[in-house]
Length: 191
Image (cartoon, rainbow, N blue to C red; front, top):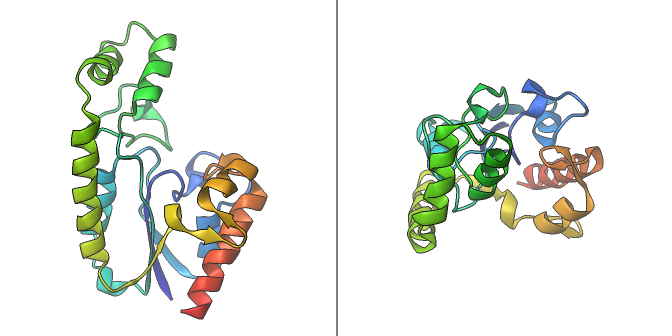
C-alpha cells in the first residue's frame, strides 16, 4: 500500500524539529509505504504544488490536510525562513501581528502585517482558495482520499480532537496522534 500525504502542519513530519513522540504520519510510515510532502504553515497554493509534483496514479491512498484560505503565499517568510519545520511557511495575519510585536525592526514583517491590515480582501482569498481546492480534487480524482479537516475520528471530529488532545506534534498530543493513526489505519485496511 503506497500512501501520499500532502498538506500543512497537521500532516507534516515533525521529526525534522521535534522528537517528543511520533505523529500520526510517522505511525503510518511504520506500517505502510508513505511519501509525505506536507509542509508546516503553507498556503493552499503550495499544497496544490505538492499534488502537481506527483503522479497520483502511483499511490493507492491520498491523505490531505487543506489549510486556511487566509494564508497568503510568499517566497520567503519574513520570520520562519530559517526554521527547519516552517521554512516554507506562508503568511497568516495573526502570525505576522504576533511576530511584529517581538520584532518591530523587521521591514519585511511590517510590510506583511500592513498588507493584512490595509489591503487583505477576504472574499478574494476565499474565492481563490475554492478554485485551488477544486484543482486539488481534480488532481486526486478517483483515488481513495482521506480529507483530514472533514474527517470523523471515532467519536471525534477534527475540531473536537484538536480541542481535547491539543499538543506539540501535528498540533496533537501523543494520544491524539494515536487516535488519528488508528482511524486512518481502519479506513485504509477497509479500503
